[in-house]
Amino acid sequence: MEAARLDADVAVVGAGFAGLAAARELAAGGLEPLLLDARDRVGGRVFDRPIGDGAVMELGAGFVGPGQDRMLALTEAVGVETFQTHTGGRNLLESGGRYIRYRGTIPRLRPLALLDAGQTMFRLDRLARRVEREEPWRTRRAEELDGQTFSDWIERHVRTKQVRGLLAVPCKTLWGAEPDELSFLYTGAYVRAAGGLNRLLDTPGGAQESRFVGGPHLVARRVAAELGDRVRLESAVVRIEQAEHTARVRTPRRDLIVRRVIVAVPPPLAAQIEFEPPPPPPRAELCRLMRMGALMKCFAVYPEPFWREDGLTGEALSDRGPATITFDTSPPSGSPGVLLGFVGGGEARALSARPEAERGAAVIEGFARLFGERARRPDEWVIQDWPSEPWSGGGPVAYMPPGTMARVGPALRKPHGLVHWAGTETATRWTGYMDGAVRSGERAAAEVLATAGSVSG
Ligand SMILES: Cc1cc2nc3c(=O)[nH]c(=O)nc-3n(C[C@H](O)[C@H](O)[C@H](O)COP(=O)(O)OP(=O)(O)OC[C@H]3O[C@@H](n4cnc5c(N)ncnc54)[C@H](O)[C@@H]3O)c2cc1C
Image 1 (tube, rainbow, N blue to C red):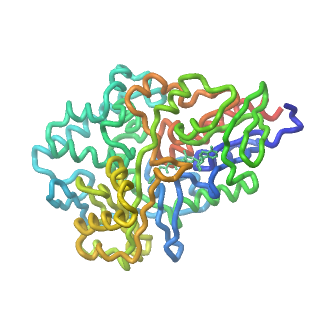
Image 2: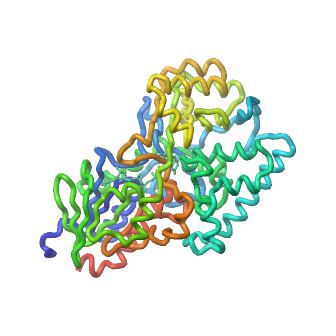
Image 3: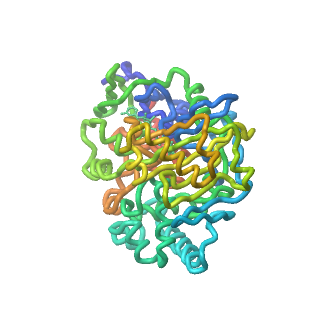
């Protein structure tokens, strides 16, 4: 294949934040990228729905927090502002049919359970600090840790039934999975990548601290606007063929000839692309083993955030569901009032098995248990079911079951000839988050730019 026939220097597959950041870096570095996405929009697992006056429901990712520096830098670069998540008042815990109001991250439990919760968090954090962040498979006793599930560890180390049950609640939202589906080494690596459990779980000081004025999809749209006609939508990549110095990227519309490819899609979706030559067995196995989490986001819109009058933040944990975590996601003006409920893991699978007409009623019933009768009368409700989106397959992240990280983890980022891998799943900081996606795109672009002599020559 001759240089004269080149369509671009680099094809970037997937226009989520990983692909957008990669294409932006490549262009800044003097290469010509083409960014291809299967959908008719950019953003991937980030998508917003307008609710008037510039406000949105964040149907995919919504929150950003301290330490997520690359996402915050990109946000600032395209002129989007952030604002703090509403936290005035008390949070709510529904546990075993009891309702407890509390401030901060850990609810006011009975003394034994409170001690147990504190010790559990301390132990998990200590273990996560021992995980090798860049290469978790090199952690001491990696195979042993990877052979067990998060649930095995909980059974062994958590003493009270209440804390065991409560640990499953954030798990369903953080990974869209149950504790018995997650490798314990992977769990530790994920906590390490975020800089500790508090960073993952907290609202002030943690990953839920802030939101985007106009929504995170505005950031994606602005980056895409900068890239202009380098972005090609409705271009699902079905096959990537490598020759010695060039690659042919096939989409149903046309074939592109490029010098390098960055694949910025989650590993289970990368498995749907045909590669010639095929990736080495560890990479193929990694894509086969990793699973997309099951996560739905459910919104109810009210004339105002009435729970604030009752002294509640709108943030709740529930062991009954279907929404097991809720937040107040009203716009900065506080009008209208928007309640968000996350339905994840087993609850998401159960809810999607119910007839569509029953799903909203089940979620609203849960909101009414937590926030009272006024929650029964939303002006509008919306359920965003990520597992049913063919070009995402679930969310928030593709996680690793036991026996994956220690064996085939090294294949996550190892290039396959002219093909480089990006996507939040490949990030070593803030894996699973928009920030991890941006970092992974920037890292993959740097890999390609480091070969620039051979790419542009
Ligand atoms: C419900 C939910 C809530 C979340 N909440 C948060 C949050 O509050 N904060 C946070 O930081 N993160 C959150 N996340 C996670 C965050 O959305 C992701 O980590 C991030 O958006 C992933 O970006 P990515 O570019 O790696 O992948 P994606 O966004 O999945 O992008 C991949 C792109 O590839 C495209 N694609 C797939 N296959 C092909 C193909 N064969 N050819 C061409 N294109 C293809 C897809 O259409 C998609 O656009 C949430 C996710 C979900 C689902």
